[in-house]
Image 1 (cartoon, rainbow, N blue to C red):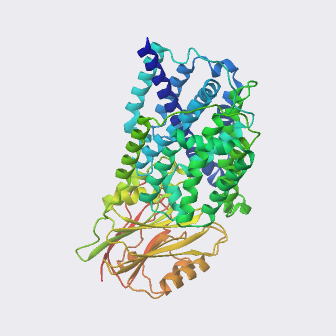
Image 2 (image 1 turned 45 degrees about the vertical axis):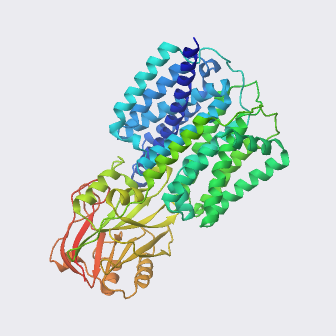
Image 3 (image 1 turned 135 degrees about the vertical axis):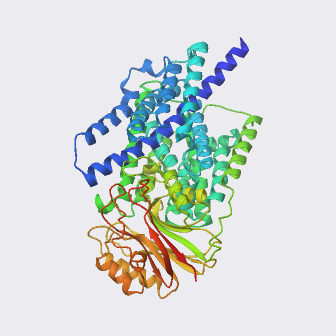
Length: 621
């Protein structure tokens, strides 16, 4: 009997952590596929009924935990967990429509499950969320910042997990005893949940995002973040936080300290900002756990608290998206991402800073298994992010240059195709490549780091220039020894852009990458600033998505500065178009050369992005 009870306890814990992990993954997937749906409807058109219908379905999924009777949040929790597992299978199919439907199912059922778990054991619910964050972090580091379990090779694994969950629930019937609506989280717990999920999902659980906010190298940020996250699970750390949160003055000062650290990291770079974000991570997790240890209300429905948290997360994420797309939507949101993060923190603080209730007394020892598990987590992180030597550049007196607009990792139909892009670059044997529309942690692109992923897959150095909210910009990838880097933001009326460069001593070459603005942008001024930044350096390669055609004045200005179009030099007329990737009509992607002889130029037929890559072979000086 004892062994059966223990087995059921561990099954309950495993299903709880898995359900919270799948909830986090489904939220990222949902916001990513919705980015594609909204982009097509708003920017490409025409608008149709699907835009409002898709959002109504999202609201229903988010509200379902609160709309259902209270008994649904407590009875049959094991079967709800198996439903979450079944929905998770869909997320590993690389199709936006399948992922949209699967993510709604997972979010709705996982929300119901979380409500039931909060009613039974709020501490177990809080711990399950943290363990889910740790597991997701591991899946990301082993996948080079892309959640490895989103790949189609994991479909069989999730089928197996669903089958095992079904057998375990049918045989052992977890959660069929114990309290039902015995404890309900406080009325403002939903605010805390929404703010907590946004801060974790968009920044604090992503070491690459923390790295780009602070300037820290990913190989340093990842193990430090993993250690900080694990530390919050130790009872001694939790006791310290409970003491701070029990005294009103100390509670307010602690929250002010964490909020100030978040703003410091947004507006500055360096060691201080990195330490501030690590402190914030420990603080957010500790507050989350401390809040779960307080005595709670015994009236109301936990489901409404969960629904409120999910709605707050939805609002915060959508408002944050406007900080990236301000040129085409809400111009006043330019450089206002900090407001959204501050609002998320205030929502969390409002849920945690209410009148203190007596904490539940816990005097737990430091479990040995927790220390061992933390060491395993850190070992996996260290191995996964250990820096690798880049492939050598050239060696035969030649080099292959390219430019590629990678569309945030998507193809024209919003399939996630970042691995196909890596294969396209590898198949072409590219040595140096300029990348545009590069996301490095946005929720709308699966929270992955496009530049790091491609650099790691291709054995290349990465020079990244953030242009919008730390997490969107342009990049230059190159083989060989690390070069002397340079970058400059260009005057921009609409979306902020810039130019990034590297002096590659192995090749005796200066390489630059750029992305020019779209309509209503003073692109001639941007070109003048970029050419002034490059100066008279020779030999030089200058590539990018110029959003200009061969006869436009921007291209004329580049040629007047001594740059040549390799297609013209090689007598290839007409030169192949690059945009869009499917049935291309326009040529707006170029690699210009100055002081370098082109040998061959071409445009591969890959449709992995919404642009085609342009490639040129050159003779090194």
